[in-house]
Length: 138
Image (cartoon, rainbow, N blue to C red; front, side, top):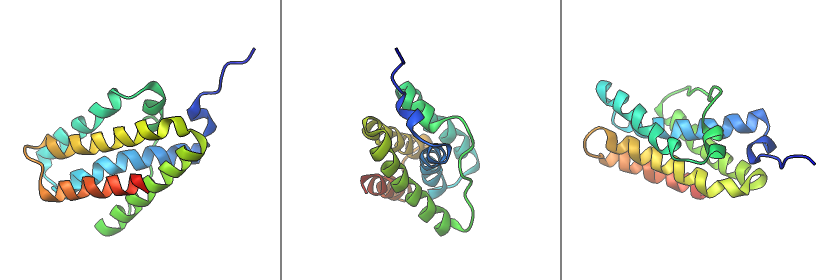
């Protein structure tokens, strides 16, 4: 008798990289909305809290391996991040639909945690979280 296939094993390496990159870059997008040297440290720790509460399957999706690194100007990075989020939801919807809702929840919570990490959430950070939510919604 064979063991049931793990949802994450249904994804190719490239698909896993897209899903991981989208999640990590979403948090970074919020962090860049209000840059500050010391805030960056607080935000990086805050962004990982939501991941730690996720199921092992979703943790595996968003950790391990290198993400796609941002390139280009701020607008290019933002556009690519939002595109990756849409692609990630599409990949998960097709290959691991049971993980879609949790993945979205973790990405949004991580983004909100980053926004709140350095004192008050700024309007720019709120806008970035809203854009992430729209991208995840399709």
